[in-house]
Length: 161
Image (cartoon, rainbow, N blue to C red):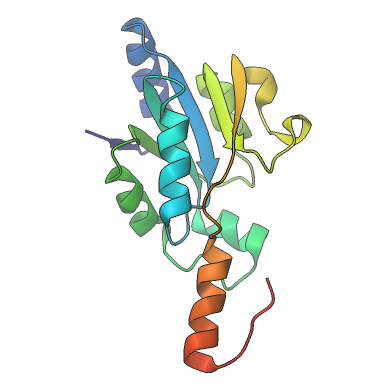
């Protein structure tokens, strides 16, 4: 059963326990605001790189700094709950920084996964991971596209990304 880590000590203890069982730790991160088919596919592919998938999600305040005051659409506790319900996810940790660097430094994942839209040299924390994998997106969907479609349907206007 997937679990949420309320602090870094819980996360560190879990990772140590799983490594003690010989399991390969995979880490990825994102906002996961309005979880959609692209997110599910991405997380399933990330999980396939190892045994235990830990997902770092940006806190609400972190998302506001990165994406603006109108985001996130879905509060962090709800985003955590949705991710915990996905079969591929073994654990979720919320981070308040703009990047997950401190989480990555703490757990030193065997595999760090990001989308193929990220050039390797821009992937934060790559130097603390055993290996970096990039996943291609097969769904042409994003939270921004969903929000824009809703606004267009219900308000009759286009919104800039």
